[in-house]
Amino acid sequence: MKISLSEILYSRWPHPIYNLEDTLKRAVNIGYTAVEPGLGTPGTYNWLDNGRIKKVKKLAMELKIELPVANPGVTFNPASPLEEERKLYLKDMKERIRIVEALGPKIMVGWETFIIEGTPYEKAWEWTVDAYKAVAEEVEKKGIIWAIEPTIAHTNLIHTPEDVLKLMKDVGSKNVKAMIDTYHLWLKMGGIGQTPEQWIEKLGSNLVHVHLGDSGPLPVGATWDYTSLINTLKRIGYEGYLGIDLAHKETPNKDYVASRSLEYVKKLI
Image (cartoon, rainbow, N blue to C red; front, side):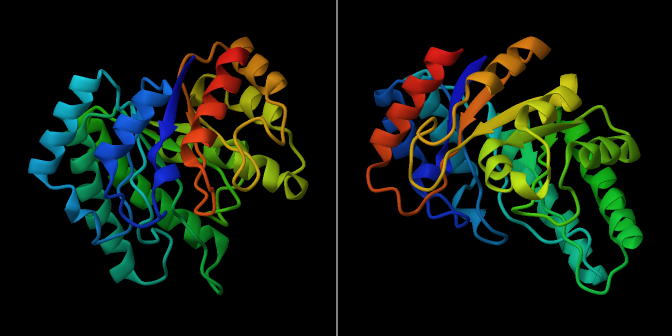
């Protein structure tokens, strides 16, 4: 397993991240060898134009730091009852995929789908699957893996490993896989009734990315013990990245939190 740092620690999530170059330099100084860039909200990621992308990639090469995973950010709702919004979702995701391809990451995370009050579950699921099939075609063309995160925090449609496995089956693409975020898992665990270890076991080889977080502005490992979770990942043969994902605007000393998190996870793997 390898460790990466999610750029949103240094951002005002979910808004665009203007200080990507600075984040890369900070990450290298702390000891990271990989950073996960993000894009922001619809209509705001034009800051990352082709010229900027070239500069970022050049700097990453100079610093010898990888950009393995991208967070495309918050987008429109593919399960919206408004056909116009569903079309905007597809248009927006196509542009985000273009940017991810240009940056170079081979994995793109995702979660965005939400049942609007009054929409039957079956119809919301149908719209989501149709939209995800279209997105899957795009990522297949670009050689990108789309890692869907089941979470209560950002969606009311895909909550559990069973949900994401059903989604993968219905979409039917080898490029659509799964990821988990421990912050959302532990924060909402009482409403799901499954441990992170159970999620990992159920997703198995379909799990291609993992985000590690903690409670509030604290470093990974400050509240929750990750020993069992990491051992479970080892048991299933997981070899992907463990992304330190601390999206807390109130974190007073971000470099300290990033450093402590890295030290803690290194000891476990």
